[in-house]
Image (cartoon, rainbow, N blue to C red; front, side):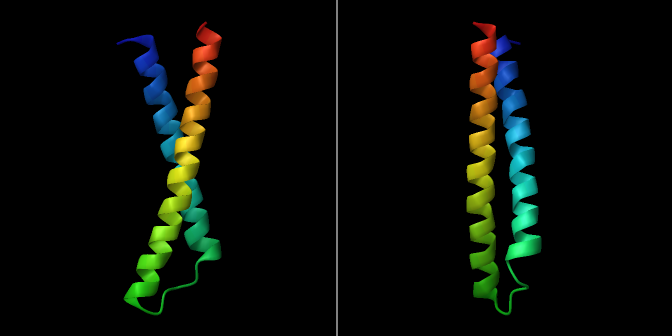
Length: 71
């Protein structure tokens, strides 16, 4: 496997784990227990947005740091 590919996979896994943690924390501490289906959908959308952003950002940062080290 190409070194860049393995670094990208590692960064993606770590970004995904960061997204999981952020989504858990947002759902557990910030979003109250939903009273309706619409409130549940909005809460899931917000936590998905925040965790997706955080996961993608952390994955990119890790990938760029690893690619700079390799150069």
